[in-house]
Length: 107
Image 1 (tube, rainbow, N blue to C red):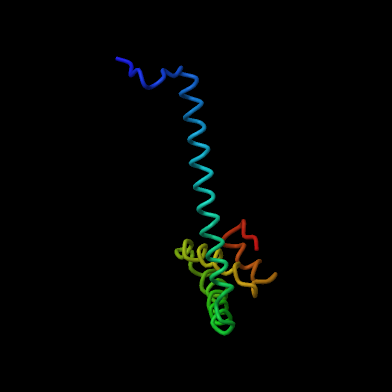
Image 2: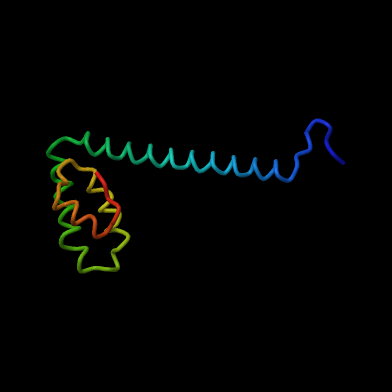
């Protein structure tokens, strides 16, 4: 029995509504990811200079020396690459090293 308070939707209307809801959900998901990424970048840049420099050096050493010889650390190295490019110290050499583990790295 049809509910008199809910309008009957055609198959095309239901499909259109489903597509619209899917696009809205995907947009919200991308917005949340972007917000999280921006917060992480801001947190890195807000670190005291000495802490920021020490953290950068440690991450760079991992990527440059540990990761090349340890393929089983692929996920860790990929995470480290996404992390290190947030540092203002990550210039051309750093970007090149990071790109090995995260090909779409951009500052």
